[in-house]
Length: 114
Image (tube, rainbow, N blue to C red):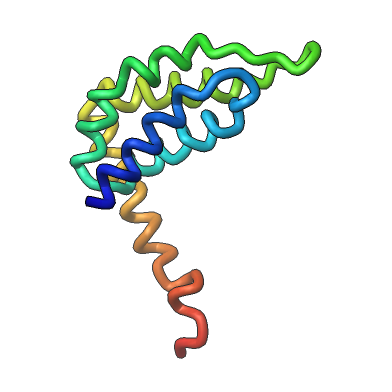
């Protein structure tokens, strides 16, 4: 099943070390998007992998004196807070749905249509 393969890649990418901060940040962004726009099944999977996300709240990576891990820490914190409340998830999913409907006619799918 494609879901299992993709989910495994997403969860494994959160375990990247060191210079992989960009991959971690992109994976966290994808997790947040899927919580808000994906299936209910993904929300349960995210809760099952909460330990991986919580660990990233303390992620540190510096290039010289520049803290490159701050974005990962903030995104992980946002996801943990989102997953903590069913009400917040419901609100964010409704908001995402209304945005999808609002911008539904814009994009590559509508190209060339009247």
